[in-house]
Length: 268
Image (tube, rainbow, N blue to C red; front, side, top):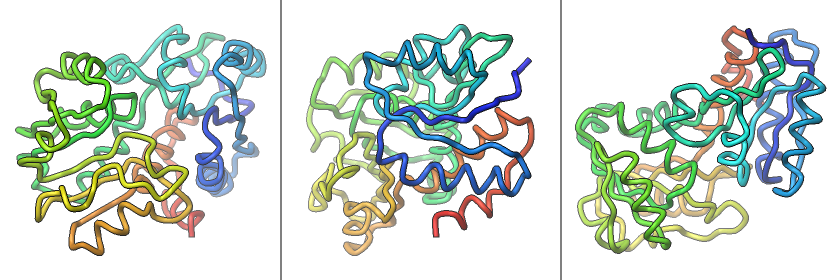
């Protein structure tokens, strides 16, 4: 059984630290749970020591860039979804053993459905990136009927390995132009735009009518999403995904649904 958490800790990139605590602490307050969601920057070389400390404390929490795949490798048990993705963003302890799940998949799925609705069932997705977030996107796309995904990544070997794992929905694009050629949805699964105003895909290359989905989230909308919307594309950044994956994580930790409205209000 899940050990009731005595601490909630986010391990990862400081950009996430400016937003995730507001969301989870709002959910905790609304539920009357006397915990505070903490944040912690952890260098990769310190991950094992920090996880051991948190296990001794009976903690649960989240992992973000650059620790999702590393935490998965250290779990005693993975949920089927985390095993499918090969990355963990939500973790807890059961009888002292580290367990990992991937609620990013549910977050991606909910946000993509809000953006495209029924069009998802026939979507042609250009996916830029081949890391843990890209794997979550592919796992979500397996729920979308006849959707197909074309993966482009600067390191072709990573894209090929990812496409092989999701061969039912994915193929590798040899160039960004190839990935975009018939795209109805363009997805950024790289960190581009997290710390600056970079565009992962030039707007001029995005097909007319294609929607834009940026898995990156910031305190304000990403520059790429703003520019895409101004150019006439339907567009969403990772905020909706962040709230939904956080809500699913909360349910994992506490066995009940959080107040999603409170979580959304916390970002205002």
